[in-house]
Image (cartoon, rainbow, N blue to C red; front, side):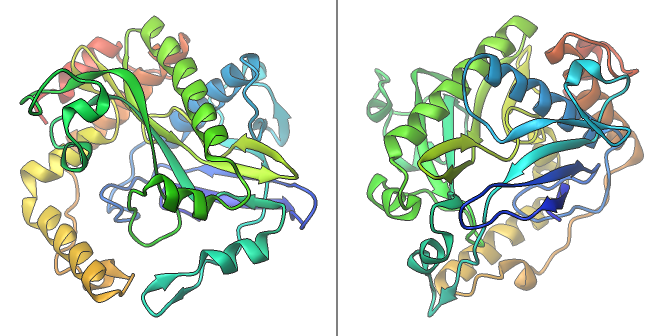
Length: 339
C-alpha cells in the first residue's frame, strides 16, 4: 500500500520476466510527503484511475512504451472505452523493486542494482517542467538564464519556460532530493539518462497537447520507469491531478489546492514538516515524520466536497466524457479559488 493507492500482485516478477498486478486507487491523499492525510476525498481514486488509464492509452497511440495493461471492471481487464462506470483498478506489468539499504547515513544503490539484475524499477523520478511557479525549488537551484530565460532575476509571478526542463530526483529515499546528472547516472544503473529524458519529453508532449485541447495548462509532472532486458517502459501512473500540476483559467486543478490550503490555515504544521525534514538531513536519520512535532488537522466537510467536485469535474473535462455526476469545470474551479 502507498499513501494513495493499494498494490496487488497476481504474478511475481523474476530476475528475467515481468510479472502482473494491479493498482487499486483509493480516496486517500498525501501532501508534503506526509503519507495518508486525515481525510478521504470521495471519487478521487476513480478519477485518478480513469485519467491515468486515458493517458496510458494516449501514450500507446503515440508509441510510448508503458507497463499499462488495461483497467479492471467486473474482474475483467478492459480498455477504458469498454467500461460502463469509472474504474478504480488498473492492470499493470510488474518489475522487481529490491530493498534500498540505508547504512551509516547513506543509501546503498550498488546493493540495489546487484539485487535487481536486468529487471527493476529505476529508483529515480524524472521530472519535467513547462512553467516555474513562485516558490518552485528550481528558483533556488538556478538562475533564469540557466533555463533559457532573458532575465537577471526570477519574476514575482509564474513564468513559462521556452523549452521544457527535465530533472532527476530520488525515488526511494525518505526525502526526495534533486540530483546532478552524474548522481542520477549512477543511481539509474544500466539505463541511459538520455533515454529517460527522451521518454519524459515524449510524455510531456502528449499530455501538454491533450491538456491544451481540454482547456488546461499543463505546468509540470513526472514519470517513473522500469528497465527490463534492455527495454525502458513508463511505469506507475502518469498525468493525473496528483502526479502532475494542471491549471484551468489560472486556478490550480491538482492537489496543489490542498497544499496551499494547509499553508494558509495550518502553517505551523507545514513549518514543522519542513523542520523535521531539515533535522533528518542533518542527522542522517531518514524517518523524519516520527520526529514531526505537529499533526495535520482535518479538512472541513465543505472543502472535502469542493475537492471531490474538482477532481471529478476536472477528469470529465480532460477526457471529454461525463463519467462523473459533477459540476461543470468552470463552476468547480470557481468554488476552490479562495481556498
